[in-house]
Length: 319
Image 1: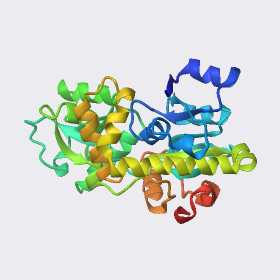
Image 2: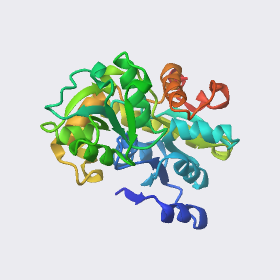
Image 3: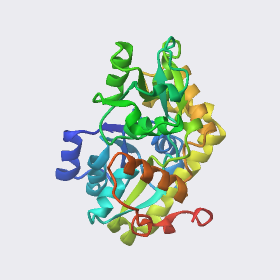
Image 4: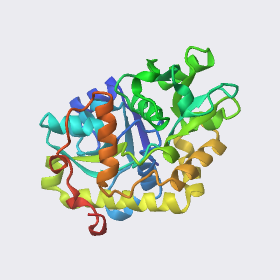
């Protein structure tokens, strides 16, 4: 049975000060976000075992640079993090590379208003307040892109950072903002109280959220193991896309507080939208996210992808 470890300071310290099991893998925001779910399917469904890789545990990374550091400190030397954190670490000179794409879209995010709101379209956001989590976050990127989609400029609405997506939703309920960024799973549980005005998976182009990163040490010393990890994850994604209903049942134990019907609905919808990548390093979706990072000032200039990605560990047909 898979062991799940929560991250935070204690987990980070354990990674640095105590020998962690080589079969543990760091996955950013696992158990909260859906991007890393193929690894749970890969472990519980026996795909990694079949490939000859003894992965049995997931360490839920806290996100951002913390997850990158945890991957680098782990004995495995591979994990899944957000693209922005990977780019930042590589630009700082860290010995890692992006070796596969994880979530290739932002289909798990929506912009919502109250059902009775006079906001009927994105153009109606002009002069309104949009709640999101933190500055330079994905949610701020999507707030700006929602305005663009409505033919507006970023400064034509007020973006309000509220510390978390939960805080943004609370502000919406209390009329502190007129619109809020939230997750598909949250909306799915409160569809009678929230109305979607932007479905990021449907209304925005693909944007790479998460990527697999590998340390130089793993790439140089055990390239076959890295190839096996990526190939096994691919098989898990193929299973999820072909049989999302079965995948949702398998994921239930990892989302114990989520109603089974909601987990089923969102898993099926994300599979339909091509949310989980088999691993191919698609340039356009990566560029789309890079553009988003520039919109919020988290990236300056163009990305030299030749210094960021290494496609050589992917299955041949994905290179």
